[in-house]
Image: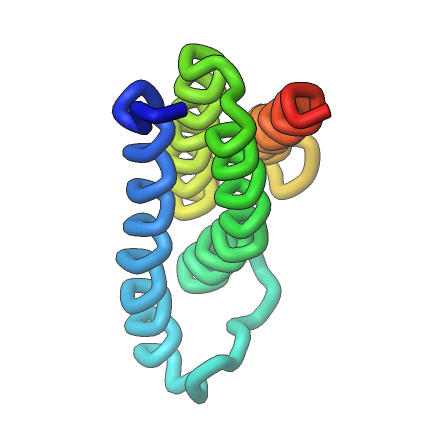
Amino acid sequence: MDDLGQYGHAIVALAGTAMMGLVMSPLTALRKQKLGLAPGASPEQDYGLETYRWHRAYLNLSETIGFFVAVTAAAIFAGVSPTCVNWLASIFFISRIALIVVHVKGIGKPNMGPRSFIYVVGWLCCLLLGLAAIGKAL
């Protein structure tokens, strides 16, 4: 594990996911501000409202980023195959981009639509990264 450069794609996925959150935060806040909502307030829970979809996309990213960082870092520190870590982290990153687009555009139905299936792809990547890290560490 002397050469972290082998994990370049995973490192880019980590940084890119964090950057998504940094960009989504003010964009979501501006939309909520236009509705006259107080800082930290939630818009009406209606997927027909663009501001609510932005809010949910941001919250969904915020809810998952910690898990992604933890399992990816654990896999890197444990010395899991760079190919495996890079693929899983990259797929997670791409799934997050797709999930944001689906949320914001309001594509599909709120439950068991494309959003649910894309979420599961990212969730599986995290699960596999975590299991790989545990397997390698034992």
